[in-house]
Image (cartoon, rainbow, N blue to C red; front, side):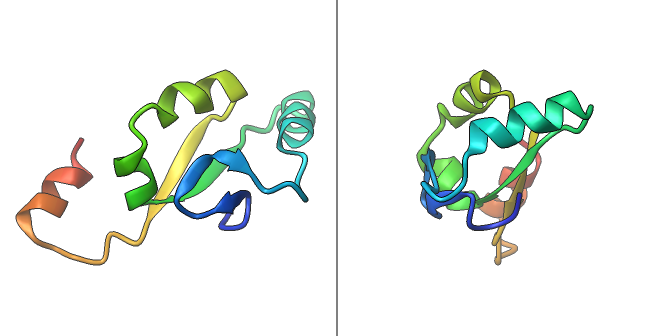
Length: 80
């Protein structure tokens, strides 16, 4: 899912209340479809426990975005 699945872009622990994320995950699973969620890189950087939470929710992966710089720190971030 692209931007909009979470209530805010910086809080990956609170899904948008207008989307029943758990129902969507269950439906995807019933159709053998894995769910990926979109994040800003800063949401991941500021919330290192998000990986465990997503695993508990049944999320298959992440699309991390808006790494709009190319300094050494960010290049190292890409390879984590």
